[in-house]
Length: 262
Image (cartoon, rainbow, N blue to C red; front, side, top):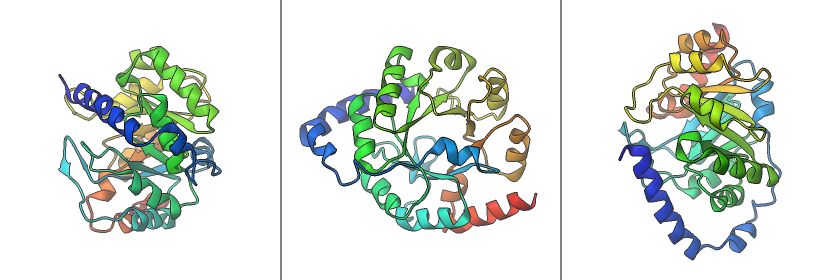
């Protein structure tokens, strides 16, 4: 069993417990459930670099990244730096995140916020809406194509945009559908955790024209972004590069300042 399979098995068990504790009806009464949403797709389209900065405490591959950062402070720092959107990990078991992290970030933002988690069923999408998320992540490797399309359609019905994450050309061909708002190419091999930017280069060549696309994982330098921009990427998801510092917001600001000068 690889790490993704282990996570999915755990999430199914965890979700069953959450359903018993918090019903869909209760989620739908959240004060944030009916809040207006910001478009991730539009933000990326109208930005010269499309940086999605992430709040991530730890990861299965790197362990603890930042155990002291506070989501509201980081959110303010990211927004002041000029990012296009923010991504927040809400998985607790493997990434140390919580629903409260996203809610705290939401209070400080006037830009799209992506709920970064393992979205496997409609309940998770309703959860995301109740937290105030503007977009949800759907990972191709985590489910069958039919199921992913159903979830993407459901998310759209709740006015949430969908970030479809693929890791190979096969996944792109099998999972791409009309409900995808943003297509993300993850440069990290989920089985080996090795990272290669060439994964983005290879897959982008077969993405339908006009589709907003981003590159994820392993992006840590101005040179990385300059290289990938040549292939028409609209945005880049960056997490550990900022979060591994004492002040993620300031690190992000310095990065974006250098990027604009490059």
